[in-house]
Image (tube, rainbow, N blue to C red; front, top):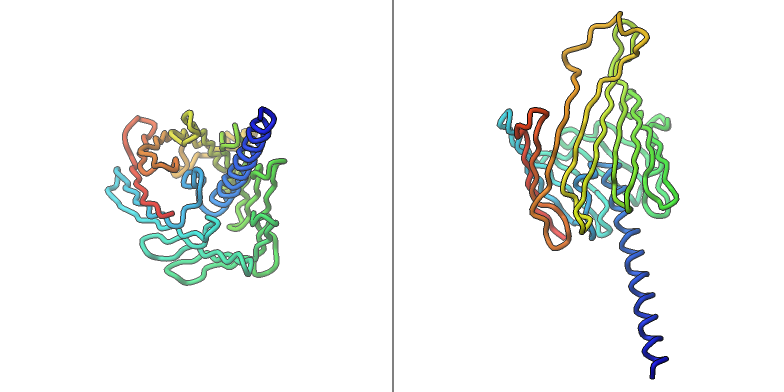
Length: 262
């Protein structure tokens, strides 16, 4: 009798471990997909989200914007709309992604997908590679290089307990007096004991070639900033449904609400 009980307990432990592993792998794939196509802040916490209606209010300028994200049965993004205008369309079957303005195609790219539907490369209509991704040993995005808009952008990702911990972006913006100017964005993510996103801190730094610093006047459009966002009202799946952000003066500058369909 005791042997039977031990066998049952062992079998249950193995099944639970397999289920946890499968859930972790799914969460990694969903996080990758949102990081590559839209923004990791909106990635599903545990299970696929079929549709998101995101209402963002710019408090400082009193502007409301509605973003709709549609996904397939696996939770991978298939379309993004801003105020009902389609701006992104993804066709995994034909390995194609389109960037659009008012439902008209602006640019079309061919995708290279791995066996898990991770986007590895993008090629433009001239068959030139404009995007490249590196995955770590767990299949998580560790680095990507983006040349879609000609300016070189390098993104790097670090993780803590399979959750995105730090995201950084370095991008060359422009050149003045033969001096390269750019921006460096770094976002730190914080989670509660249930691994639910509760806070992010984003810092924006200006990158200037220090050797030629005396030859340059810093443009007014480039400035350093810090934004702190809080994520609230998590549902039964661990997804946040409300958030707000504070600027460097600790003034509220943005609020966001999400309506989610599973």
